[in-house]
Length: 307
Image (cartoon, rainbow, N blue to C red; front, side):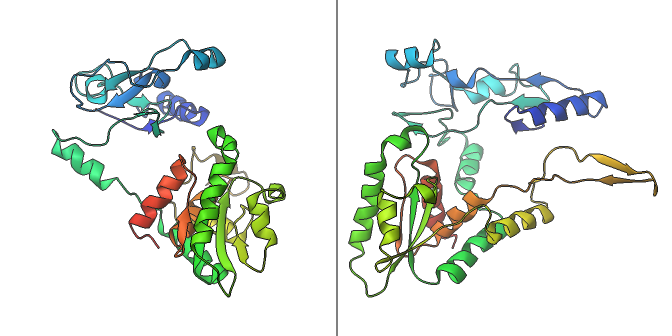
């Protein structure tokens, strides 16, 4: 398949398409697959193409979200591979490429192995873990080494969005049990906190209790405005690690008659990735939020010894 890119169709994406088509850069044929909400993609998984997925919205969810569709499992090779309607497309646009285990199924993509196609199986094995670029890994290691300066525990606490805002008690209980398992210490236990709960809102929560008990605990966290994060973002742009986006606008200098290309004014958001790297360095252990894909990512980084 002459696949140009696999992307979420944002406004920037469509601007690129219009530009390329207008100036004859490519002969544009666009193929947009089925509604991503209705499809769970599989690969060579028996005769289940078109079968109903095991997870379907219940009546309550249908009424609440005004859902009228059903979820079906579809073979990605059959629907997007050679001989399919998508085969001749130049651009393949997906609404979402995010997936995660959900109620006995997967949210969008259920491809974990390919026993009948060794090439695909090898690819799946190779992409199990894709490390961050050196600039991000280096920043995380630097924070652990120069700022924390001691063995530490990492707590990844997702508390505000989706289902997580309803499970504070369970999330904090896991952290409390881990801290208790470390036992008493003559020195404060160092804890790196990675959370979406602003520090101003810690009061009255278990996080607030930890922050107030400075004799037993020393807490660390990062903000987007911290120089380590800002400088890491700048180094990524300077290193041209695919973080720039859009077509570079041309500005013609009338006096010098020189056309200049101006890069993007916004720096890439790397805070999350630096935080994940720091957590991979936590020698006293890691406590993640159950069901969080970020926690799964950190566990994978720790498994592969990033730090």
